Image 1 (cartoon, rainbow, N blue to C red):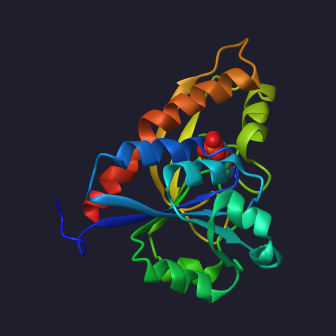
Image 2 (image 1 turned 120 degrees about the vertical axis):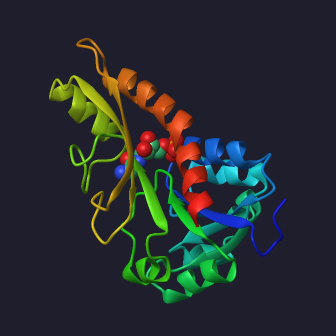
Length: 212
Ligand code: GAR
């Protein structure tokens, strides 16, 4: 076991269902050297918030200043903190938690410069397509799979990449493809992609942490 000082700390950002959050947390649960120190959400209705609560991970809400005083939300998810996403105080908060790697797991907002400056080459994203195809603003979640099917692609896949100031365009760390059959629906493709995400995202994060 590493000392507390050497322990690696993750912050996981979410906007939706949180299956990737769940898989990453489950993967690292038996490992005392890696800890998910907070889940950061920009969506008060995200099921990922419930997962954070069930996992016992502090939840940070973004741009919800009004909701800081919302007792119902507070008690529903036990919100630890709320921040304005554009405010440097948010980066400082993550630094104060000792975050080593920021993981975007279905997080849909563009990352502000103060966060890029605070965590250079330490923010990664997973995208449910083979970038540069089907990336950029508007291409997220199911929209991606619908476009892949509409364009009769023969394959799709996942891309894990560093995050920069543009959507889906940072340096690529890892890609894995899967065959799209002629009769596959967007739901079929989504199911295949979820399996790729489950089998690869936590392992890729683990390998990156080894090098930090
Ligand atoms: C995942 O498929 C992820 O690749 C995708 O959103 C889904 C989130 O699912 N991300 C993007 O589209 C980013 N542009 P989850 O909330 O169940 O992990």
